[in-house]
Image (cartoon, rainbow, N blue to C red; front, side, top):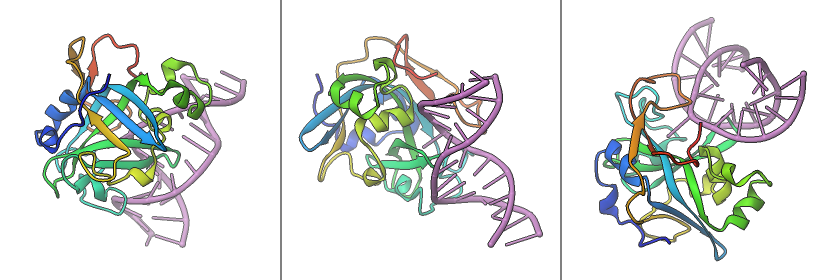
Length: 194
DNA sequence: TGCCTGATTGCCT
DNA sequence: GGCAATCAGGCAA
């Protein structure tokens, strides 16, 4: 089901390209021996200085520091004071670009996901950035984690090529730079948000 | 210091 | 469709 963990080289590419390449990969989370995994079906790229919708466009703060930590790191933040969102950092250290993971197709550990998500229907387990972090048990403790090496509890893995085309469109849920085509989805997937 | 906004979600009418 | 929950950052005073 899920292949080898992605190495550093996978993340060393332009952020938009990385956002597209992550579609179809499998995100795996492990906690106390329990494996939970899903196929990535929706991502959004957030750039640096020229992107006013990006947390990093005004430079580092205590909250967004790990967004500048270099390729292959995790950036997790608290959204609306309520939900956690997971990003994969891209670009060299100090630049501040990242890919937001917005939706997964659940593949493994469905029982754990259902327990964490409080009995919603399966379609909604990971359909949305706040939902997928809850289903995978992710929180601020995962902020700054190296997804390529080190003490692992979370990592993206290789997978067979996506069964369908990847389509690009405008990002959702933002009020600035809405016109930029930086959202990537797996065509026809019922697991995509919105 | 105080007020507004936000890469969201789920409950209410 | 409306809106509350809940908190960090940005900005004005």
